Image 1: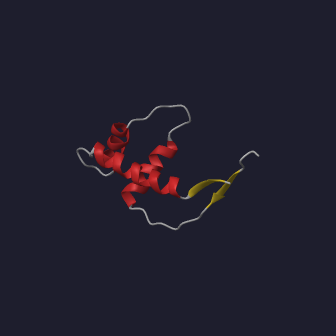
Image 2 (image 1 turned 90 degrees about the vertical axis):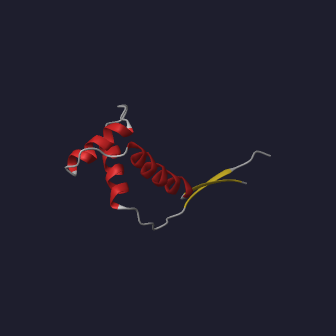
Image 3 (image 1 turned 45 degrees about the vertical axis):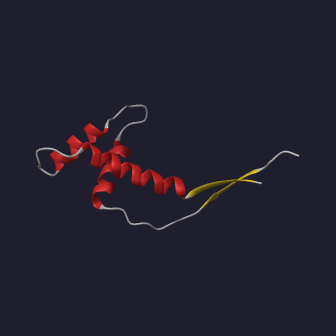
Length: 79
């Protein structure tokens, strides 16, 4: 008997910080297939906020938190 895979999508309402939402906005604006680094995003955010520089590590952390939440809401179950 072959195993069957069932895909369930669970909707969670979560609140993300304004900074995380800004990081996600810049990632979504990036065209498919084009590489963008955390440094590029940090520079865009710093320019947008009129500050000298932005932490690249903060950008990576914000994206990591978003990715963990995104992956948790998509559940794949083998039956």
